[in-house]
Image 1 (tube, helix red, strand yellow):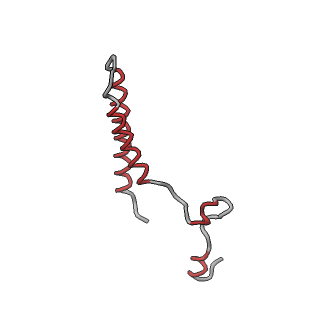
Image 2 (cartoon, one colour):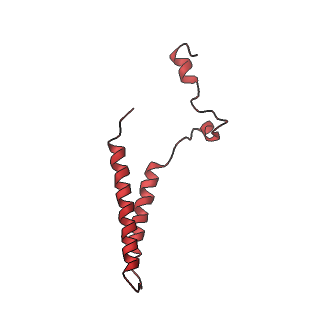
Length: 86
């Protein structure tokens, strides 16, 4: 058990044997990259409407998936903004 705050600060929180990336300081995700990739995907789906489509079914699927993705991205953004701070 740590006797003071310095010993507590020196103690690793992640075991490097379980997660080798902890040795060189990486432990996390790409939240900003996920948002950028998500919005690029939404734009790409909307641009896919341009083309030689025979019916409207393809366009409905493309717009529907783009709308669902946009709602999900907005939901994640709002949750992150309203999350409790530690």
